[in-house]
Image (tube, rainbow, N blue to C red; front, side, top):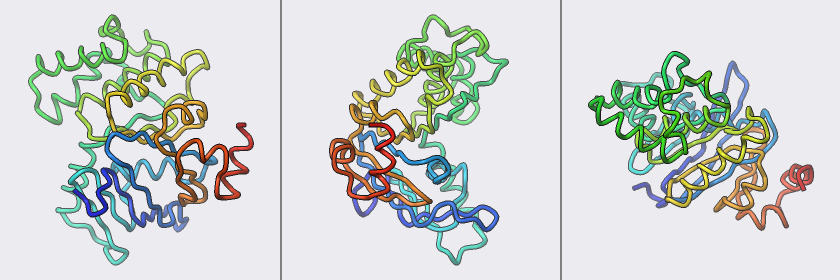
Length: 256
């Protein structure tokens, strides 16, 4: 376990694209079984931050720790070695990611979408992977839709299938990048309900969202992200009633 005892620990994270600095020394610590909500204006670096935690983007400098896996890069490390990429792969396999778009394979059924990664990546026997997938479809309320193709599912059903697909790899933490932003308003709640259920079961989750009611009701803590940095971290009630930073106050004013 990492030194400060947080289950997910991000320290001094930097990331630039083509000379433009997107992350400017981000720090965040999340305890095991916590649901942390990240809020902030669009373009502030929230999506890049999540993508760095699960190594979809390789950060330029900093440390990411998930459980007992630690990935570190100093500003002097321009060339990365095999050990770094091996650790990055382990980290990626321990983190589930749910995107704004559902990214399901259109030619595979919901069941096949969920069994694909365990069979290919983890060499899980197909029958075992299908049994696990059916249990996950049950968990997200889609057991009767196992043999439906994505085009036969609503947006909310597709996103729930995408959550089940991420859970199929038995992640230690789940990341969500605006998971309801592409959904019609009537379908949002069914996706949030799955995240609430996972929260009750003790899954560690980090959620980028503009759903303030969900944040207020469910989050253990909230982080306000702006211009490549986490400006403020607080429990929801304090964040909403007496934010410490003027930028947080201005942002939340639009929702209250």
